[in-house]
Image (cartoon, rainbow, N blue to C red):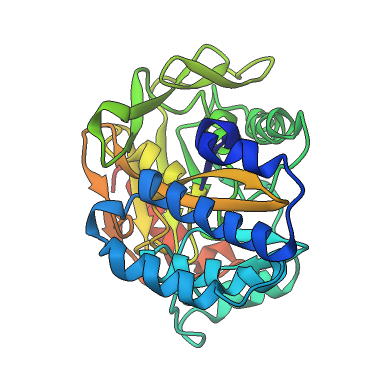
Amino acid sequence: MMKFKLLICLFILPFVGLAQKQLTGADSARKLIDTALSYAKQNSIYRDKINWAVLNDSVLKRSAAANSITEAMPAVALMYEMLGDFHGMALYNGKKYKWNTTIVKADKVLYKELFAKFKKGKPAIETTMLENGYGYLLIPGNNPTQPGEIQKIASQIQDSLAKLNPSKLKGIVIDLRLNTGGNMWPMILGVGNLVSKGKLGYFIYPDASKNESWLVKDTSIYSDTTKVCTIKALAKVNPKIKIAVLTSPYTASSGEATVITFKGQKNARIIGDTTAGYTTANESFGYYGVEFIMAQAAEADRNGNIYYKNVPPDQDVIAGDNFNDFTKDEKIIAALKWLKGK
């Protein structure tokens, strides 16, 4: 989950003067690696668990013969691997350089309905009425890259929710099974009228003095006191509404942060599978045309429970997904049963 994009000048002041000089390809490769290692040592969530002498030596050896930024990038990928950072990556010239591993190992037979839904194309926001008084909202992943896109996505989610007339709903299903991540802020603000007041979750840093909370106030979402996103309005909601949040092994990153937002909320229940396990908050900076994205904090719910690996549901419903016929979808069946108090 991308938390914020940070300016490189905040972290590599020792290198700024050198970067402004005319450098050879080998010099630029060396400066890139030095900067990446320095940044990781200061900011990686895993920094206190690393043998830095071994990591530095290995990465420097891998990049020793690099005569360009491109030739240095495999050493950057090695750095992520040795950090144990499977959520972070570096982007350069349209390519990703990361630790080539995956922690999502869903059975393709057991979860064939999920795979089939993904194969139909990029998931989009979906709404429907499951029964009289019970609505359904699917929130997919996102990838906002342009100014104003965060607000646009949040508004699209909220507008979709508003069409269900939440002031009249007894219950709602928020489907995050196809939410593979992106930006958490529009996801949460998009359902900002369904979350409770006060702090909804926390970013937990190795340095506890940096810990931050997230919350929705009025029509804005905040990281501590920093306003991240605002939309025009939030629809009125039945104060007695119940909320079921559906998860799958592919609910990841910002999708997981959205799940965490509802963890511990009295009128909400998480139903489904344990999530993918990308529960770190990433921050980024750019240098020599390379964008470094690095895991820097873990995420915790409103009660302070920290999710280092994944988010378990409140009620397990393994697989049983059916996006073609919700009356046969085991997770939706379980959700409706809980929403009705049965």
